[in-house]
Image 1: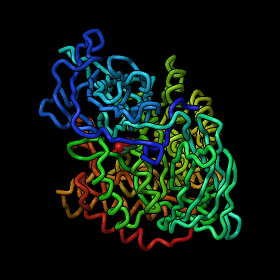
Image 2 (image 1 turned 135 degrees about the vertical axis):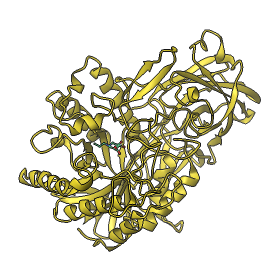
Image 3 (image 1 turned 60 degrees about the horizontal axis):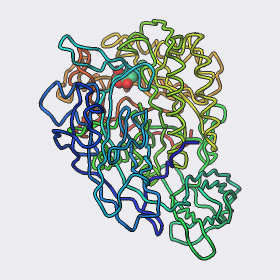
Image 4 (image 1 turned 45 degrees about the horizontal axis):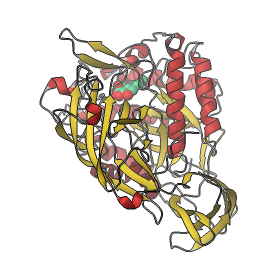
Length: 603
Ligand SMILES: CCCN1C[C@@H](O)[C@H](O)[C@@H](C(=O)O)C1
């Protein structure tokens, strides 16, 4: 069990959640002098910067964009007198990739992992009815002992630089909202739900974790506010008659009200939206509420102009409108858990999410997938650092499942992305990760990982752990691109024939396939990077998918163009988007819309 609650910050009759978003003081600490120089009491010569946001794209200096090392944030926070007697926390949506938190000069917590929330209990260090000094030291260096993996080099001028083992920019900072929260001394710590369908009715099993022993009441209301069921006790089952199920692209949310009571007094109260649905794998089908579903959608990134990987509520709204327009029903949170608000929106809009832990870059090379496409074998999991990496990986997995477990939109866990999975050493590592996910998730959702290109029939030693086999494949781009596409098609068919011959009897989905495309490029006949080529590539790939009945999902890489490190393979970022980074359609979006709107519903 984590030592901080993962419940989303909410104000209720017993709680307060105050946003600290806005301009914060900010200062780089290239000499790593901050601790010794007393920055924990306040920054000596700060700039000011928005939170939530990555810091890299605000400035004009390349040294700042490429900065790797320590950097500090500072914010004054007023703690009202009426909070005295409650427990007071500072809750970070994330701090990328690690943080130490100080209040009034006292260290209150630290956290490793850049894409999940954590809280600092500041009850005993704050002054009430007064301003308090919050200072956060963040560090964005990469290594092979934390996820996502990479390394940090030192340039000839002594400056550090991140070298990711992954294909997205190492944006960092306080990239999600920060809240000041107050809860009663006895409060609701966690809520866990599970579902069973019984004809027209449903059973909602629940467990409520609190910090005390008073009575717990649970009331489930339908969307009209009518009580659908209620129960007393920290664990129980709510019998819901004529349950209105949560369906793909046809969401229905109930409101679960949880109260800790002492007679008529409400000690703590928290409300969470839930969707009654089941998800399971049966043979080669993915079943939602017992009915087969075919995943249509994307690999995405939390990525946009100016604020980088900062949570952008407007981009979130536009992305969902575009996904509805194009006929998608799902996306993978490649390659890290996204902001909570995105899952809340998917719950409301009826989108299916494959929730991915930031285990990317677990392959022994900088351009990992390029090495993989050459069949290069690496013993990534035989390093002496592997045990420490596994510890970080399992902790991030525990946080992700604790945070996202009650979202009806989350239908599967992606536990690694393009790891090295062809060596014997990978097998025990994968077993630990997959077993942990099964143990932590009361709903026992399907588990998967994205197979990199050298993980094919006969070489991959780890797809045995997957409930859904997810393939990242680029036949026609990284392999046999251009006029050789006819041979790429044959290679894709050959691989799928190979999987078919293995009688894996699991659903296969493509979690990546795509072609870099400049929205400015038209060419007849086509050439790679032209809009015409992206269309030809997707048509070839889809035609092959349609001839294998165990293919149960297609998630194009990528929803939108996104920022990567600079290099000879990237034109100011990855251009495989169906939409531009500014969320405007490339020509192929209209073809994809036609395909997805014409695909049969049942598979
Ligand atoms: C084996 C494919 C790996 N895949 C990872 C993803 O993060 C990259 O952006 C993508 C690409 O190269 O476009 C390749």
